[in-house]
Length: 274
Ligand code: SF4
Ligand code: SF4
Ligand code: SF4
Image (cartoon, rainbow, N blue to C red; front, side):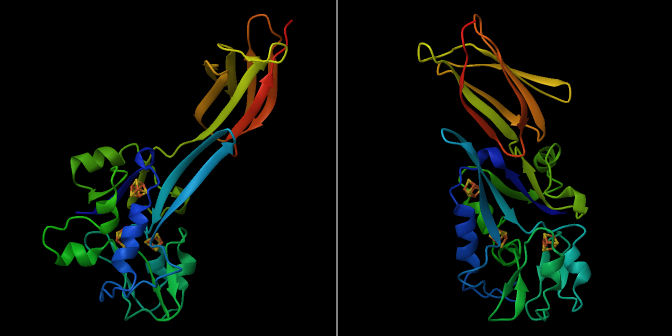
């Protein structure tokens, strides 16, 4: 048995219920031996981060829930000199608030920024997987954060469950290069986009049906402008694209170096009649 969190970014609407539910469960509530009370401010054991991309009017935003990954290879546990960080049989990683000496070594070792320091208690703290509820409350099978998610973007389960395995197959983890083998799996983290609006400046009208292609490393993506003259290439990798725009009767337009280290709005693009 191994407990895991599943995050489908495409389903997250940014309601912050997960973050609020975690706060509600832990801020001011002492759940020893699982965790001491979380301070009212300064800690987010689940933190919802927003990622706006592009520039007005071509903007997209997505949200990603970040929490302790309950890593299978947990640096926080490896470095703790007090033996305060332990892994349960179900995979959840806990910091014993009474054994923690507040040396912050776990905090420094965690590549995910998941550990917080409690100034008043002089201890380190983080997500517990709401193990106090899982262990002690009848009929509770999931933590407060996933229970509060109205869209199914954040769920919790057992990795032996076939539906969970299906999700995990094809999902990704954050910072895989750390080889920490997280128990939080993500799907549908969007890539970058390139967008723009094509128009004819002579008649001040958008051009519908212009052909647009974006090329990188020998791979070409195709689209056409819509009824508003807009085009979007969605979910692109990071790199340098060549974008070419063509429409019947017009000179074509080339953007040689469109960098997708962030999403790009190429703005209003005039095409001139031949
Ligand atoms: S995310 Fe950080 S705090 Fe959580 S188990 Fe991994 S190394 Fe430890
Ligand atoms: S599992 Fe519990 S402690 Fe962890 S983020 Fe969710 S609500 Fe917070
Ligand atoms: S509760 Fe669900 S939908 Fe709302 S912000 Fe959290 S993950 Fe997204």
